[in-house]
Length: 461
Image (cartoon, rainbow, N blue to C red):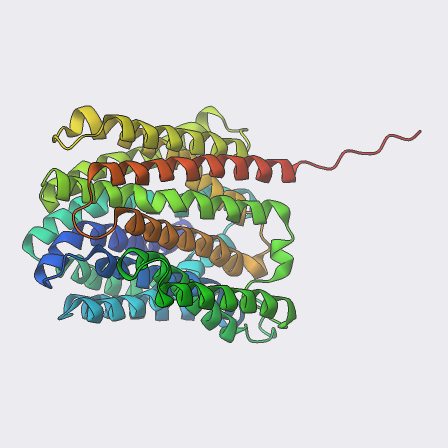
């Protein structure tokens, strides 16, 4: 193998490995929920959900501004700085002494993740010729599935020692990736003379999303008609409207309106958002079910949920080999329908009697197949055709849509399950919600595909 090829392999490993690291962290934290609540003396799902939501809100809001900044000032610097901050914040998360301290450090962790995620995709796409961009985007997207497969199993073992190791495991891996990035990843810089992105817009959308999530998560505890919930929703509406207004007037807005005028890109983001409304609850709801209803340990739960994500990369590879000419929108639409079938199947067969192999296993595998058809194609169709100077920005928009969907889905799930020990009927509503969002994903994917077709040529009279 040539030195150039070896360097390319190392660069790909570092950039894809960073995406894998953030994914593993997310899925390990899911498994650690029960132990964190026990250790801190709280069983409040609404409080614990902020361990996920604080990360997701900050991460979602900063993805695009970070992408814009690194497109201008240098992607390698942004990538290394983000990776280093993520690693240090992981160490601090493991040292937390209460839930809200942990939530704060998770927000700091999200800042690092927001810096390194779009830059890793931007650096990867910039290093490849046009014909290899779509496969690379799918590979980058598949790291999330691999993380979902390994994260719960690894996390289950670590949580048996202490939930703190769910965060400390990031430290040695992060240090190795930082060193490798400094030594081997080349810098890529575009738009060096462009104006500074609208960072105030990033703050506005972050607070707006946080207010929306706060109202949804606390609705049951505070009362849906309470001044605090109504106030949260009012703040969300005002700030999100202000963000939309700023976007049309700032010389360098958080989200470039020109990107959103590309119909296929816009529909890809709609499909990504609505799919992740359901995807956000698919894993966490099953983990909560197995731990709270079936009384599975963290280790047993980890191995139980690891099997489904294994089918994500397998499905993606087989589907593209069997149907190399299949349109991405069609694949996503099929994946959405299959994910809906998985949700309905779960609703019909799962009971409070522990029976993983005869009830949970089949729907969970079907869900893994659905994700393998959906997420990689959404990321590929949304980013592969972007111009090099907007690779990180466009990747940030796609990632933001995904994270907003995840946090809203998790918030809706918390609202449905309510406080105390949720009963079987509430979980069934959650899974039906997951199925409904999957159908909406299929419709958005078909619209995305239709927008790609060339307009018909008028026939002369």
